[in-house]
Length: 258
Image (cartoon, rainbow, N blue to C red; front, side, top):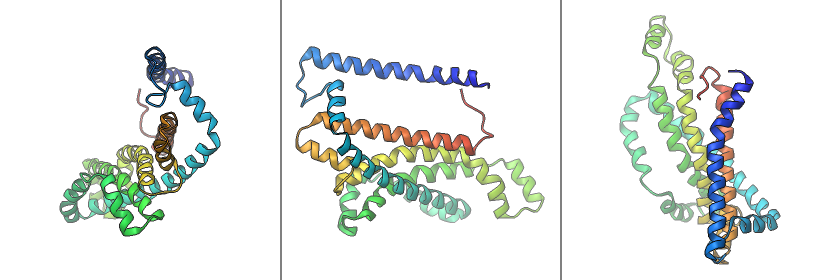
């Protein structure tokens, strides 16, 4: 597809949700003004932007703390998910034994585990990173295992008949063919990582957007809570876009999807 065609396709996919968001914000602004809703209960979007801009420096410092925590936790969670998937794929007995436990682990709310992690490991960085890791590793592990099982059987039989070893089959066939599914899991983990960082900061922190939200909740500053939510959404979108661009760069053989 030529660049002009790509731009047209990109704009065609972007403008419907953009119009929907603008319409939603306009309706929100109009409803607050028309119904005379108190700002402490539901602030108008214009007030949220105004108050958020007034606290740019403070929000910037807390946002940077959340970004640092998110990136480290996301890297550990993704690496853990990939490692678990590869080990379980190469050792079928372990997969049969542990896969149900992985599914079961996701039925335990992270918000319920957080206080226990704080009791066991204190209020330092370790329990926060464990919360993000628990949030991120599962989608990566499941997507990677799914991708590894979708290997082209004809190609595998050909490589086995040509004398290729287990490691060669994994590195040259299974892993490359699983990359689209791997990135699907990583994209989910990227958005979850921001949520995990916020939950970790709620449980115990002295900085970060989650901590900032708790402070504003105590002061009934719903406008600043909404400003923090806007930052969380922006960070999640940024993480998703970065992973999409990385996928396009690494998986170049995958055809563009309209």
